[in-house]
Length: 350
Image (cartoon, rainbow, N blue to C red; front, side, top):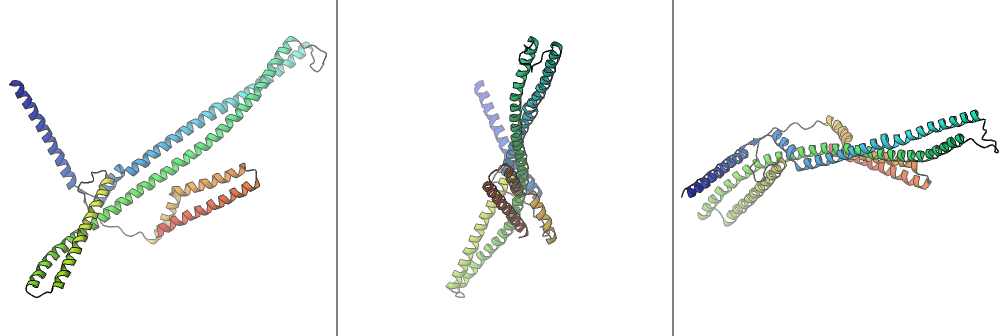
């Protein structure tokens, strides 16, 4: 009996706890749905929770990591293999000089002349000569190693430079993405406020036509109106109600989209604070906007670097026909770059 009482008390406690948590959660949802957001607050939440921004941030981190890897590989090759091979060549050259001086000293001490074909070289001279020959053979291998390391270093330097360019491009793309998200938020925010006003207006029109139908039906019964007049009112009422329903659906969809960007559940009610639209950008500021756009657009930077890479590649071409093809490709790339600039400029002015 006591065991059953304990079990009953435990179940009751769990039930009360769950009930309390449910009430708290429901209150939090109700509080959240009643909150009226300003445009600044919506932007803040959007920049924090937007999947698009999170994705570009992740890409930026990956490309930055690749840049660090390329930088480490370059430094390791430059200060390790290349410098090591170069220092080895220098060290061998010093050892060779020492051995040559040692041979000369032996020749002076023993009177041995290596140009005398009939003379027998002293044992110590032969020993040093063999060491000198070994060092000279090592110089060839060390020089080849130095050249290989230098080539690897140059290749890795190009990889590092491209990695830095990729980081710069991704940073610009990230900034563009943030601006695009802010613009999307402003457009949705403005559209929602406008649709809410239109929904209220259509709602009043629907109420007006409900009354008008009753009046027309009464007039028809009294013989003061025709069937055609009544059907006309019915049609107008149907049209107004259809527009009202469609606009409500559009409003609901827009709020779901903005909720999604803000990181809120799609079905949550969303209340927005009306705001005063700022003045239209004066025509005199268009040039400033154009200059900033041309300076910060990632596409232009990438196209310009591609042109520079093609120009650098000209130095490695030996065939005149290949040079002409490369020059034609460079000219085409320049035309594409100019077209991109024109498209950006026209997009801002339009």
